[in-house]
Image 1: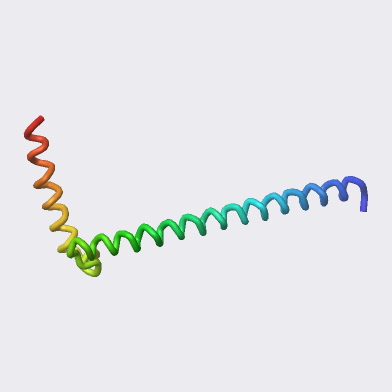
Image 2: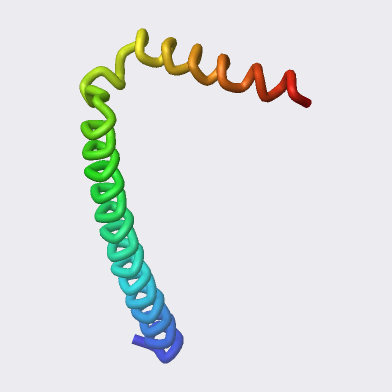
Length: 82
């Protein structure tokens, strides 16, 4: 193995170590984001229960349409005031 080959091998090992460290950082950040998301989802679920909203109904098209109507009804008066 020539000096050039050894140097190239060392460079590749350094790059590999750097990439593995970055991958570990990214995995740690992803785990933090997932933990935050789980917290937000559980908090949202609790708040919906307190407000009397059934969480299972949130994913239906009818619920989305109803929410859109409510949003439109609340924004129309605000626009008229301007």
